[in-house]
Length: 167
Image (cartoon, rainbow, N blue to C red; front, side, top):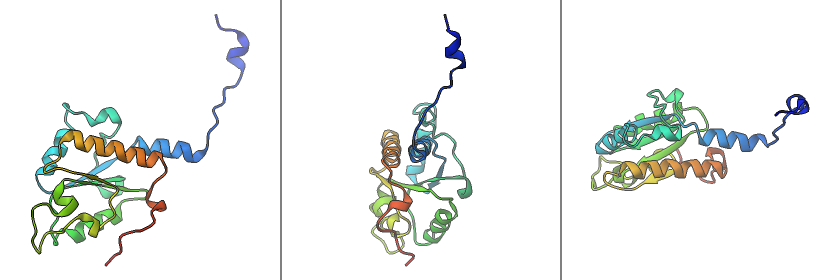
């Protein structure tokens, strides 16, 4: 039985705004997939019903950089694609995060050629690297969860010591 004073007494939850902000940001990614190769197929597996990234709250996939806060680069990036990737990154609103998925996006993979970017960190800053060729869907989910932990601990774009230069 509920007492009358329990219904009329106010309930308060106190916290710091920064804590609530980090909590909300870490649970509401809107990813933008930038898939160019076989890693993109693995990303498609992550959003399918078998792995179901929706259980973590990351199923709102956006294909517009102005509506996204997480850029997932999956696959080989050539020199012709680099300015496009940089422009997409710059169009994303702050705060924004980047996951480099696979060996090709992280280090150029087995393409040691003049036309392949040897890691997207030459173009844009990267928060989490997911290794593999191609990486497994479980690996990408683990990378997303690692990014979630980075945000909860307070690391975001504004607290970085070194940014990638425009050159």
